[in-house]
Length: 369
Ligand SMILES: Nc1nc2c(ncn2[C@@H]2O[C@H](COP(=O)(O)OP(=O)(O)OP(=O)(O)O)[C@@H](O)[C@H]2O)c(=O)[nH]1
Ligand SMILES: [Mg+2]
Image 1 (cartoon, helix red, strand yellow):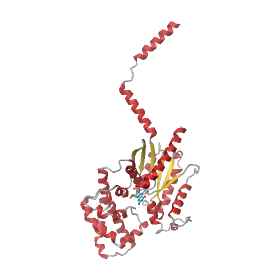
Image 2 (spheres, rainbow, N blue to C red):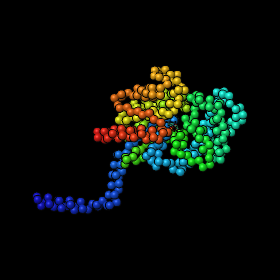
Image 3 (cartoon, rainbow, N blue to C red):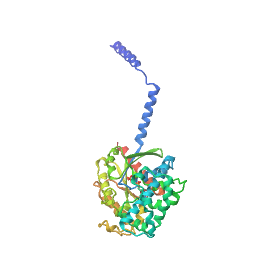
Image 4 (cartoon, rainbow, N blue to C red):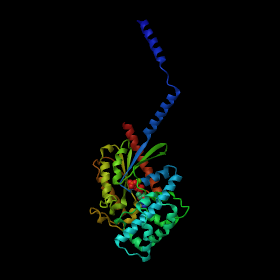
C-alpha cells in the first residue's frame, strides 16, 4: 500500500513539473493588473449634476487650476479665446433684440445704425467661430452699445430673457479682449460659457488619491445621457444656481429655474441607485445672488417665502430647505455649501472640506464591505 502511495506521489510531482511555469512577462502583467485594480479601488468617482448653467463645468475648471496643471494648455486657451469672442457677440445680439422688443429708447439715437453690424452674425456664424480680425472690427461697436443707457436698462431686466451670466464681465473687459495679443487668463476662462454636450471625464490626483470628475450637460436634452454614469459613483456634487429665483429656463422659457432645478434634484436624491451615495448640494453663484437680492423681490416668485426679502442669508437657507424637503429618506446625512464657482479661493476652501467628508464616508463604506 505504502509503495502505491509513493508511486502515485512521484507520478503527481512529475505531472506538475510538466506544466510550464509562468514566465516573467505574465507575472509582470499580473502585477500591473493588480496595481491597477488597487488604484481603481481607491479612486473617488464624483458625478456633477444640476440643471443647465448651474456651474458644473466651471467647478471642473477650478479643479484643473487647483489640483491639475494650474493652467490650461495652449490649445485650450486658443479655443477659449474664440469662445469668448462668441460669448461677447451673442450676448450683445440678445441685448439688442431685447431692447427692441421692450421698446426702450436709445440714449443716443444714432446707435441704431450700428445695430446691423452685430445682428448680421447668425447663430451658425457664431457656432463656426469668429476670427480675430472680425472681432477687432466690431469690438468698439460692442463697447459703445454697452455704454448706452438703453442697453444698461435692457440688461437690468435680463430676467425677462435668456442671456449668459458672464456677459457683463466680458463687456467690462472688451478693450483687453480685443487686443491682438489677447491671451485668456484663468479668470477669463472661468467666466467663459460653453454649454456641455455629452459626458466628459477629468482625473486629478490629490494627495496620491485619484479623483475622477464626471461632467455632464444639464439642459433637458442632455439629461437622458445621465444614467450612463450612474455606476460606481462615490458622491454626487449637485449644483444649483441660487441667483435664478426670478428666471425661467432656456428650454421652455416658462418654468422657473429654481423649480426646475429642485425637481431634477428630487429625482436624483430619491433614486434608489444612489441610496448609498452621498449627495452634496452646492448653492452656487452666491456673488450673483448678492447683487440680485436688493433689485429683485423673491416674494414675487415664491409666495411661501417668509424671511427677510433683503437678506441673502435668509434666501440661501430658504433655498436649501426647499431642496432638503424633497428628500424622502430624511435620515441620510445631508451636506450643503454656499459657493461662487468663479472664485478660486472659495472653491479651494469648500472642496477641501468636501474632500475630507467624502474620504471619511468612503472609508466607512469600504469598512462595511
Ligand atoms: N458670477 C458667477 N458666474 C458663475 C458662477 N458659476 C458659474 N458661473 C458662470 O455661469 C456660466 C455657466 O456655467 P457652466 O459651468 O458652464 O454651467 P454648467 O452647469 O456646466 O452648464 P451646462 O453645461 O449647460 O450643464 C458660465 O459662464 C460661468 O462662468 C458663479 O458662482 N458666479
Ligand atoms: Mg457644463
